[in-house]
Each structure stands twice: as structure tokens, then as C-alpha cells.
Length: 391
Image 1 (cartoon, rainbow, N blue to C red):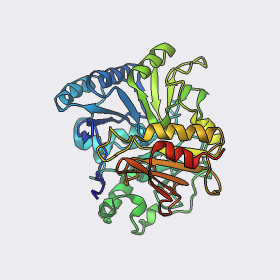
Image 2 (image 1 turned 90 degrees about the horizontal axis):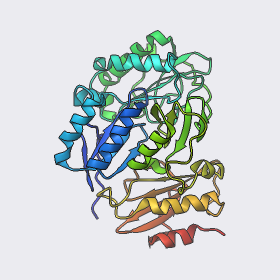
Image 3 (image 1 turned 135 degrees about the horizontal axis):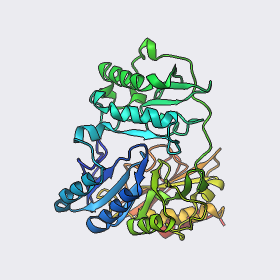
């Protein structure tokens, strides 16, 4: 059996990655925000030169796919003119900065993120997937999202600098936050962290100045779909939307910008509470799925990924509808239950133990509970639904 290929980096715009349908190109927003003109330009590029879809990644980036090799230089010229590119692939690879998307102009998150971007060249060479979280709002929102070095609101009300994987951080003033992040990144490299690859896997004792007993604050409320003080939040199941549909939504509601979240949601900035369901009214409401106690995750699947042998999204939508109606059976589990539909054994969409695992294998699905061996193998999508439908 051919094992799935695991890439050691994320794609960029200056360093795209080949996939099953062509090049995958990823655009990193600054402060989680693309302007209206930038969004419309990205949507047009996805339709003219790509597969016509846009993905929102778990690192709050926009991703285009299905791009031909010959079209890549054309896109670079367009995106460069739109202010979407970095000076070099090296700078692009360092700019893995996750910012709480509901920042306000002039607040701690905006100022610290801006300062970090201005000093990105001062960072040492880091492993490809290492990143930063600027989570300095009234309460932290990025505690469960991928980052290695964090500035976040502490339980005491001030800011803390925290290494991912460590429960405590050290208090830090907003004016010294970026200096602390850079120093922690340099220590990570100097102490051999590049071998571990991520901060949470690096077991070297922290330097004395980075040790503390300050806990992060309690997580802030989730960014729910609907009206928001900055505009309107829309959900994108599995983080994908047709580029033409997104462009029409931006034009119809008059948004001035689009804020990107790591939670499969986008915030249309500068609009009132009259945004209709412009993106895709036919897909299930994942807030309603969450209210029913479920979360459904799915990778891009076939034909987009060359390592996937099954269409994951169609089955995942069916399971979301079952969950929303209270018709999805599972072993007893406390708290939120997770369904993970994966196109192959790599399990990209949810690399953690899930309540229900549906894994693609040789053109069919294997079904298992939690981390146990498969209960059923070689199932069709209809058979998976039959096994999981409880009433």
C-alpha cells in the first residue's frame, strides 16, 4: 500500500505546492484582513486561472487551487500589483502570524501585530509550520489554534508571553511584546527547537526570563454567525466557497473588507445587519450542528488531493444534516463530539482523536469509533450514512 505523502510546509504564493488538480497557492492576510478590492481580485483570479473555489485555512489564509504552471507568473504579477505579496519567499514563510480577527483599530492586538510584521526580518530561520498568535483582545480567542509563540490576554487582565505547550506565561507590556516574541523564537532555534519542529514538541527548559506562573484568561465567546459590531459573520462549511459566489456577496452587501478567521468563518467588514444568506443557502448551519453537540471536519478529498481516493465533502454534508437533526449515533462521549471524514490515512482535517472516523481507502470508506480499529471497511457513502443514522 502506498503511504500518504506528508508535506513539511504549507504552500505560499511565492512557493506554491503541486496537488491533484494543479498548483495550490496560499495568500496570507495582514492583520487577518483583505480589502474589498483585494478580495474581488482574488476571486477573479480563482475563476480565470484556478478551480474557481477559495479555501479558508485553519491558519486564517486564503487558498486558491487548480492553477496551471503557466498561469503562476500571471498571478504573481496580479497579486503583486494588489499588495498581496511579500518581498521574498523567505519573508513569506516567516509571516505565519495569526491575529484575533475582531481586533479594533489601535487596540493591543492591532498594534502588536503591526509591530511584529515590521520586524519580521529580525526573526531567525524557523521550521516551516512555526507561527505566532497575537491574541490580545479582552479575552483570548486563539487558545486552540495553531501557533508556537503567543501574546495573549492573561487571567490577571494584562498581557502574557507564552510558549505553546506550556500552561503558564510571563507578564509582558504591550510595548515589549514583540521583543519578547523575537527573543523566544531565537531561544527556540538556539536550543535545538528546529529538530522538534514545533514549540509544543520542544522539551528543553525555557530560559529563566520566559518562565512564569501567569495563566491565560478564560476563552472569549465564539465568533458566531450573524450580526457583529464590525459587520456580519458568515460561516463556510469546511472553509470552502465558490469564488464567484463570494465576489457577488461582497458586492451585494457593500463590504469594505473581509476578515479571515481560523474557524471557517469570514467577517464582512463595514456592513449592517441586512446581509442575506449570499454564500450558500443550501449548506447546513454548522452553528446549529455545534448546538446539537457535534462538529464535522473534512479534508478537501478527491479529486483535488492526489492522495485522496474518495469525495469527502458530499458525505460530510450528509453527516452534518444528520447531526443537526439529532439523528447521528455515536458512542457515549462527554462534551462536543467530532466526526472526521478523511480522504486518506494522513488525516489532515482533524489530526486529533475524533468520536467518529470515516477514512478513505482504495475508493471506499472505513468506519471506526474514536481510535479503535475499523468496525466496517470498504463502505460506500450510502453505507456509511446507514451505519450512522440512528432514527
